[in-house]
Structure formats: C-alpha cells, structure tokens
Amino acid sequence: MTQKTVFLLLGGNLGDRENNILEAKKYISLQIGHLEKESSLYQTAAWGVENQPSFLNQVIKISSLLSPQEILLQIEDIEKKLGRKRYQKWYARTIDVDILYYESDILEDEENENGQKNLKVPHPFLQERRFTLVPLVEIAPDFIHPTLQKTNTELLEKCLDKLPVKKYENRILHS
View 1 (tube, helix red, strand yellow):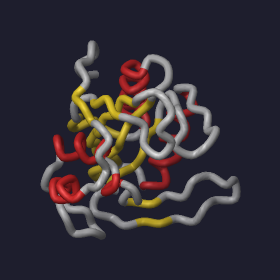
View 2 (cartoon, one colour):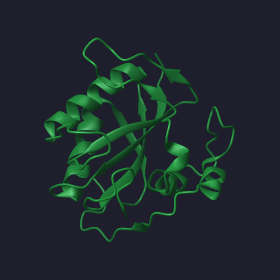
View 3 (cartoon, one colour):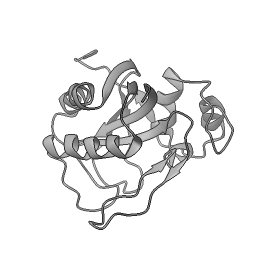
View 4 (tube, one colour):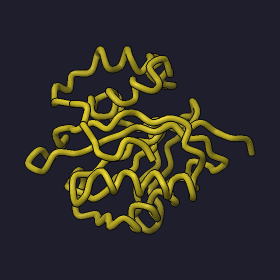
C-alpha cells in the first residue's frame, strides 16, 4: 500500500488541553503515520453542546500506510490512552481525534456489532464548523472537498457557524 494523505482534527476541553494535543500527536506519529504539517492551535467555543469549557483545536496533515478503518481503530486506542470517556455526543472530553479527509476518498461504514461509531469520510460536519475549517484552511486552503467540490477556503467563506475561533498563544509551539 502506498502512503495516503490524511487530515485529522485534534481537540479537547478537559485537563491540560495543550499537553493532551501534544501527546495525541506523539501517539499518532507512532501508531498512524508521519506528521507532515500542523495548523496553529485555536481556542474555540464549544459546538453542539455549548454549556461547557472552550476547546483547543488543531488540524494536522499526516501520511499513513493504514486504511481508514485501521486509522479509526488507532484513534480510538489513542483517545482511550489519553483518558477519553464517552458520556454523550459533543460533550466535554480530554481529547477527540476526527478523520476529516482520507485522500479524496468517500467512505461510509455501517456501525459495527459493538455499537462503535460509523466511519464517514469526509467528516460529515466539516463544512458546518468554523473550528474545523479555520485551522484546515491554514494548512490546506485549496484542498477540494470530494463530495461538495469546493475548496476548504470556499467552504469557510460559506460557513454559517459564527462561534469564535481565535489563535491560541500556546506555551508548546510544536511537537
């Protein structure tokens, strides 16, 4: 299998948010693939369930030999190692890692027998979330969404989400 380009969104709003993102990137480099590019860190308001602490978010570009399904399994392992507990959808968490794009592939897996989350690529809410689009545009402005046929920049320009997304002055610059 050849190296595939994958964009991941990292985020969290519990505990040491910066360190959790840094640790997630270390595990991703060990378990999933080579880190090629990373956005700035952004402090963002919670989306979906808004009455919770603000998030730190970052988008990274990696190259990986793994399939999307293998990446998802590794992500779930990394989230568990970093203390992620799933209480309810869009709730506070130490770390969350989402696959935004896997090359220009379009995938939709069924829920497995354990009730684990479906794998949908590109991420189904990507175009609705400024906290995803702002860091994504920073590192891949011209990447074309495979189903919407618009660049990330065009998606951000049309995004109706008005929640604030601000660059975060972080103490840990890069891993």
